[in-house]
Length: 322
Image 1: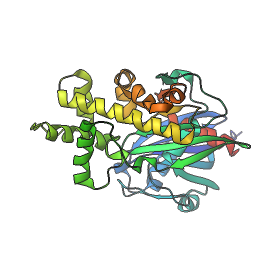
Image 2: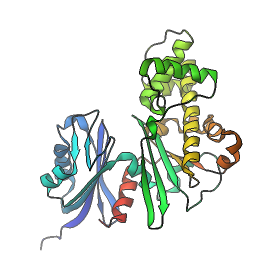
Image 3: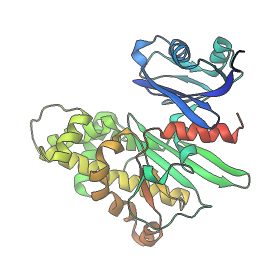
Image 4: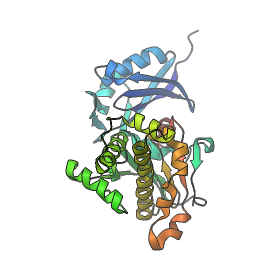
């Protein structure tokens, strides 16, 4: 007798370098696999490869794809790869009746009500207000932001392009760094400092201000040397990164009334969690003059879960009863 085919939801977390896939079966995430984007000409080829290797006895009835890029009408043209991710094309290619494409930070925002406590590290503040908005931001390839807002019908996700809001300094040193970045880019967004490329920008600007001839370093190299204390400029760049991140996070908490808490996610956090927790991040978060007391009550967390997008996609699948 043939074994019945189990229904599942295909989940995907797609970046410019790697794409991670999984299957949601009976409330359990299984078959997690990572594929290199460069190894596949299209997202269809990558999905076909994944399903060939992982879908024995399983039939996807729906798919939710979180993509690191601008999504319009469930379609995303990737910036750092040739992939075009279009829900209509994927429905036709795989005969999956329900497919949604969302921004990756929308998935992070959906996760905020169900991330396990063991995957969160609290950095200051009081207790969250359960009925208040929560907000996530995450430095990685870019600076993602999204909110999770309570409504009369549950919770809704607030998309944001806040990473492109103007960056501000609070002292002469920061103003000088931002001035150099302005000479290079024109508009200086928060993302120009708070991302992998942003950390490299901070390092280069500090070296220029101090008249130092230093070798070009990647964000990973700056992070490693900064945490270890092997390079004073790397250390200052990392410290400045943490301070500016605190200022931006505090601004968001004020603007959105995020008394449910601010969550710092993104790939960089996993590499600097200890340093960030001991940095000026929290002091700068609270350093808003007359509203210091307001911000002192709002908790901030570092999100240490590496599968946070899948957590959010599972929540979305359950919300939509897929």
